[in-house]
Image (cartoon, rainbow, N blue to C red; front, side, top):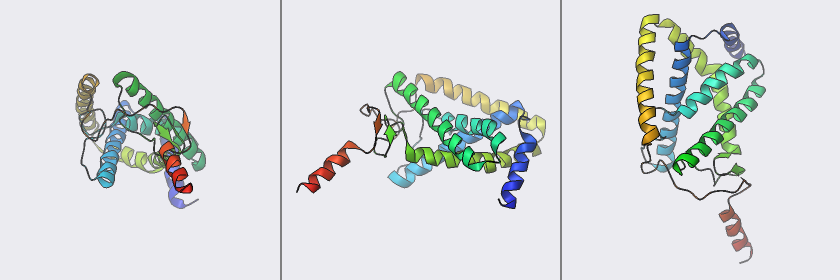
Length: 216
């Protein structure tokens, strides 16, 4: 294990369970914004379109905020076991994503993501490749991002940090309430995809194409 990882782990062990409410809020909002930047950047890279990803109007995706925050709060206690952090992080993130996807389908009848083309997907809402990516993301949150964020938070004057958190929470709550009634469903954001039936090892259309070429 490198000296860097040992230093990061020591930082975590020194701060486990010692977060203030503002620090928890700051972590949630930071991870929500990081998730939004990731989704927007990925969509721009793959599809060449700059769109506001997610159900909300502001630059945040709460599913990433919840996943990142829970990863830090729950998994930093086992930071000495990075493979376990990776595995549990992937499981935690995938569970959150599946629950959120089912909720959005039930309430709005829309999908904000669709993994039906990915191998080993379930209902097009979760898949093995994305679970592995989220596992890596949880490791980054626990070992790198959270310590850096907390260091920055604790360098700010407490009154300034408190006012900033209050202001951002007020914006987030207003956006969340408005988006619950009128979610962001613009072009390239939400789709009305056909329902999937359980676990799919590979997309059915690809099987049909493979059989077609084999029988030619």
